[in-house]
Length: 270
Ligand code: DGL
Image (cartoon, rainbow, N blue to C red; front, side):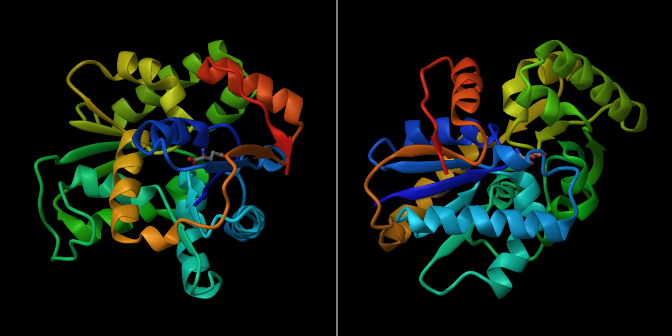
């Protein structure tokens, strides 16, 4: 009954933690493609090929359903994967749509025409690849009208987080927020549109100020998955063993993960 969780590196662990809290009975198999992180500066074809390879590895562990706990892969590759590559007995879901449904106050599968929503000025912080895909604006436009989105590509932030350089990461958050505020001085809501960024949520909140509502994905995605599995329990795959896999150096990745999540995590080679 395993479910796979994929990210380019450590960021998806923020989603995994929320999934473990919300669905403690499900064995999750995590795969971080640390050998190829960051994805946010790669071309869409490259992100597609790497993501397909990661998802296939998780299918091999008995995870018929894989969550792309990576906005970059969800934005740049998921649609193409679903349309051209995923076989009928498997599912790959992203983290993007649940976030937009939360922002636009929609239930899953509500396909009614776009309508006015409370939030009018949204700041999006994401990787360069996610920002240039414009997937966030596209998915938002299907659901809401009159929402002004200002997107900030946060170059360098994922590398600093992966390398554990939190002083640099904090400085980058402050400068990316300042750059966005020059273009949108008073956002009502901010979306942390990269699964690495919840690790810097405090820094984002401090730089944005108390008037800005911060939407962070992990809890939103966990609720959406619980809802999905209640409707589609047959998508719980045959795998039984939770594990952490990486394409990088298991020891090094395990140390970094332990530091971030403040509990011991052992990675195995994928
Ligand atoms: N954590 C991923 C995301 O949500 C990917 C970051 C990266 O590899 O650049 O976008």
